[in-house]
Length: 336
Image (tube, rainbow, N blue to C red; front, side, top):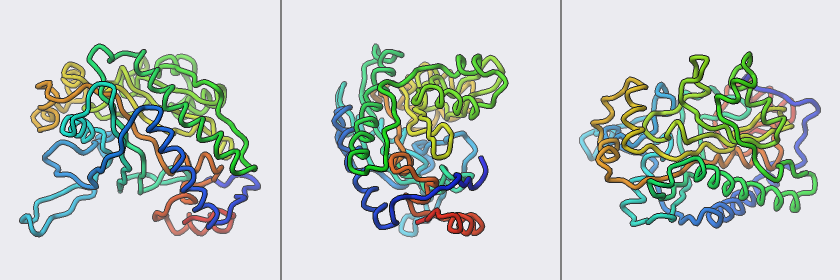
């Protein structure tokens, strides 16, 4: 995707001030809907962690975290989180959550190596959530049930916002379509993964593409995933068709998390078995942490989607290349 895409005849019906009010409405409503749908309790969460803890999300394995030294701790290093995927499992154990119970938190992160465009920013804000399940519930049935619960919160929020703002027409279908990454590759073998996502999202309106991170029949991955949080057989992304940019827009990445067996296997496949010695990974291998399902839902992404904005910078404050900011302003895209 190019750095800046300008939709034909784009003009937001909301002023910057009206947009800020609408952002608050979207976030407040969806947060309540998500917590109710999944029976989640809000908790506080860290902005930074120690690198030696193994708690930071390695994302695709190449992104560099922002780090700094702490003066009063002999310049010991800390890292700004990429996500809280691993930290949440520790929290579920330490806070005394039981099977069927879960938590969510407001997460802020900095991704310094992100390639920015209309939907990607250096600043990431999302609701990170995690829920305790039994080992027997680590299956596709549980995953699909949970996806539908998240989707119901998304659809309820769209219905609410479309009643509050009459320029917004509901787009989400009644149900979400499920497909594996391999089935999608078989369907569109000559397309790139993003092209496949765009095509299936446009055809179905809303789709959950599962089994992301594993090697497909083509010898390539649909997308990268760190080997030590999602089980690559039991994860996926919620993607919806977004007509403002005529593309598939990912709203959530989620999955059933690794157990001791899938962690060992995925670390070997990824060629990073040394991570098994880190505290978090060692706790998983020793069966000291609960089995869980969890995910992240982009706050700015859903605000952008519901308010029909052309650029994520219209609903969050971040830094953009000067040429992008200038061109956006010239074309009626007001970056915050």
